[in-house]
Length: 284
Image (cartoon, rainbow, N blue to C red):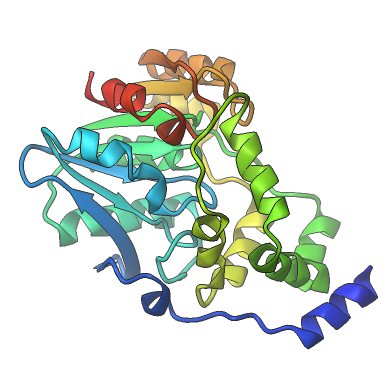
């Protein structure tokens, strides 16, 4: 397998290009990170939407306009995901700094910050540091998950298998379709073109970013830190979420003394599965 991966890497090209050539929308420099973002609405208090692992900001395209009826709404790509130019070191502290820089660059003050999945920890951290007026944790319990064993970390860093898998993902749609279908959960879900998920993998530096994040595990907080947080928060989970269970969400809501909302007819990608219910949970 290693030999096959080495040969595949040798005969294929990475197709990596600067983020500005793939994304023709808005960019802003946030804490030194060239950050891609979308926006909706022209009036009202600001809301910032933060995606999770492997999530470009298009995932908010249905929720953003609903919130924009009464608010100014922004969705940006965390460093390492979407069309933001990878910068590093891809840690919770760095992502929170990126959010701070984004708020400052666009003069948002203290917005409501909605974090999905991995982004839930960013929302909590932002509220704890006084950068957000309220945190909404969507399909994420904000807890960290430690990185893999040492031999797996070595394989991620040095094995040609990782490069081969990443290049296959941009050329063969089946694996990505399976991952996304699992995130949606049972029942019908909106059809999203596979390239909407895989095109960001072509951004220059995306491979290095994914390696760095996989080595260190899922960024987040430990439970004792979560329990000490004194923030205004709402926790909302898709009822059919099989990636982060609603039970984990209820525990996080208990730790934060926050309201818990169950989003019906939705899995882990609840903002795509039931955007109206998600918008209502954010605004409630």
